[in-house]
Length: 335
Ligand code: GLY
Image 1 (tube, rainbow, N blue to C red):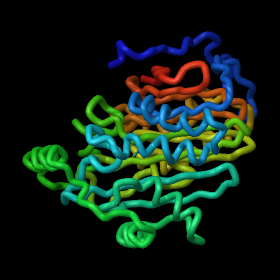
Image 2: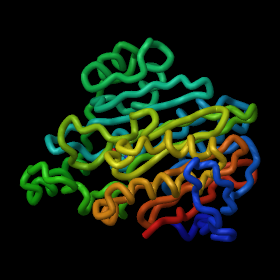
Image 3: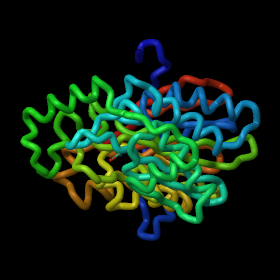
Image 4: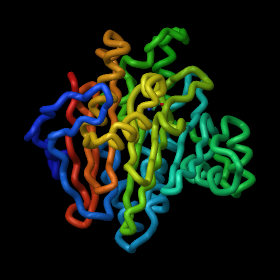
């Protein structure tokens, strides 16, 4: 698949020459690709197909919010994607529970967490934002709201996911050992490409973002990761830019990762340097844990400059604008 894609490693030309000052207002010389607007970027290789769907909205002059919702619905519907949407791996008890959030250019946001039996959590999150006075609905309440809004209630556990779960049960001992998920099915490893986070800027220069996942495979029932948490899995500030994350959500939540990235960009860092600093915060707080987990951040600023950084190598992100609709870029990493 990668051979057929334009897969580039953004060069380290002009690697960061200036360390962060204590006030975090340092200028950075890290290379940041210039871009044309509109633009949409998203996490992982499955972001290419998602971006193309978002692009259909953006190229017609549509709103970034509509683009990101349409875009992330692609991996949500993909029966071969076991980390997002309807074919997601279940939790330890065999429940497929989905997390998603969305944020627009006005700072409006909506979110659902641990929602079951609904295939497109991102669209439910949008309706939470638009039709309720709340930001977040969880569990049964989220499902109930979705059904009231006309979403079809359906069984999401696919035969493939059920088989994988039953295999896992044979050796898992059903024990809540910390990081037991971080073996074969660690978010972000080769088996588990984890969350899609998407950021778009439309022709009017407005920014929106969306983030959706089935979360950590075989998690404890009721576990919620970073993806539906505004500020952790996603954050947008229309004056500054947007950021989203992928990987082990617990570490992203602990560091309010996406909000941190946007704030660092506000203080002058490039998207890549802001992502790098957020990754380094995670490593600094838990160096031993960080050696064995993946977290990646992806960010875009108001000018359409984008960048990413991850703890481990293997992270990639997709970029789509008028010049190129299927660009896949290898993310830089600490290890
Ligand atoms: N980043 C997805 C999760 O931790 O659930």
